[in-house]
Figure (cartoon, rainbow, N blue to C red):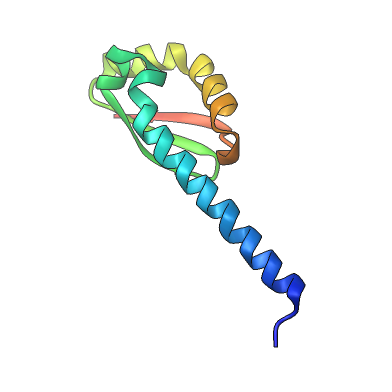
Length: 93
């Protein structure tokens, strides 16, 4: 028989994981708005892993534009998606 504290801990872990999944889905959906209409239409989030948001860009010029906006985008992500504990954004072609 499991202890009540183990059951509560398991439930809390599941709730936290569900909230993180909801926030991740929301972030994927909102990327174009967050990055900017032009930059967002030439890039997409590929994954969120260990506090890193991996963004794929379709052209080196857009990579450079996003690189210039990276710190402001990161602040926005950290403010709007605290559950994801985002530390940085990595851009790639």
